[in-house]
Length: 71
Image (tube, rainbow, N blue to C red; front, top):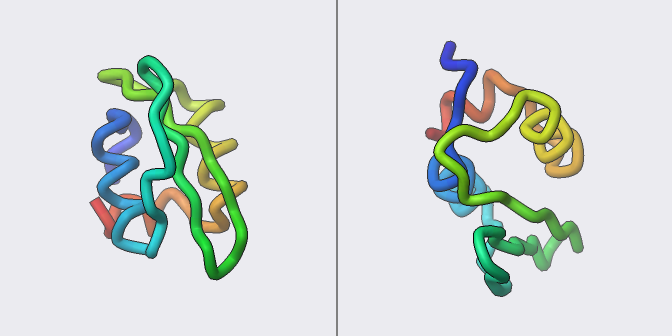
């Protein structure tokens, strides 16, 4: 199981669970799921910090194992 993810990998994984890119401001991508009405901001960095990644996963409602399967 991989512990370090880039912003591009997280965006790709979230697209697979029906999140769409709403807009981008600088190096941050704003994604939205219309069915569940959830918005999340993904930083497009080479390496997303552990706390930031866990906050994103908590908001989206998936685990780290599920993220690794989606990437």
